[in-house]
Length: 297
Ligand code: ADP
Image 1 (cartoon, protein in one colour):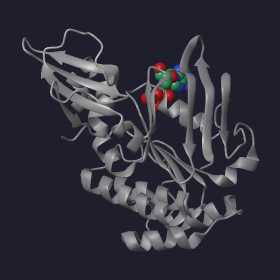
Image 2: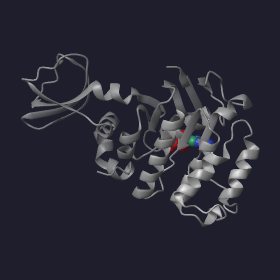
Image 3: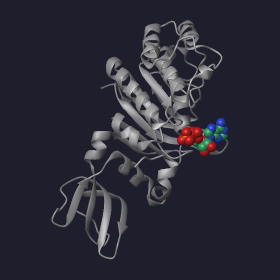
Image 4: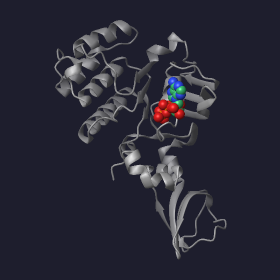
């Protein structure tokens, strides 16, 4: 599979502080990737670099083989829904569809947006400012999909939505991705939502890539091990201990495996994406994580 989005040693600095540093990953075509990390980790910065709104201070980012900064040639292939879905609130949905067509002549398909708005029961002549947050997010998604982008970047599109609206938004996104094969990079705090919809992960922490890869590969190479208290020595079959907690008698480890683990010594269970992410970000975050990340248990 070809990479639609590739970052290689990508960095962006504000003053003497790096908002993103040494960022290397690639996103294969047709994948839906989750971009996750705590507040301030660099997610928006990465999306703005990918969409060409920011110029890298180090390394490179490529969209379909081209660098996006100051490059209008790449714009027809890119869709971007920024945080809080900024739309012209005095416009009606129908006017936005017409305007989108004028601004994006290359591949614009107004019927995509019109059909979606009809399915959602959003009246074309209703002003956007009078719609609910969930409806506005849906309008922004419909407009982005009408552009028929090859890469769609979404910055926290569901953060302000209630669980039902979130569910509907992600369903809509998944439906159209399945139809069109669009590659998606979606930043979100809502880890439990992402597990259902994403097949690739980019995890940022304090400006760096902490973990990236296909979700199947990542889940296939990590285990939770529970056994008698461990003395810290190397464990056959374990490449790295990511997180550990101990009681007097028992140890619980999140590990990356590279071979067979002795199951007479350890009870080995699979981990979910949410636990994997929280494990990588460490116990101290986990304590407060449910509020900070909006995790729904
Ligand atoms: P996230 O989207 O993960 O919350 P951001 O990419 O918005 O993180 O921010 C990453 C870091 O860069 C943060 O420390 C933030 O304060 C800083 N930053 C972002 N934009 C600017 C800016 N325009 N000027 C100065 N610092 C910025």
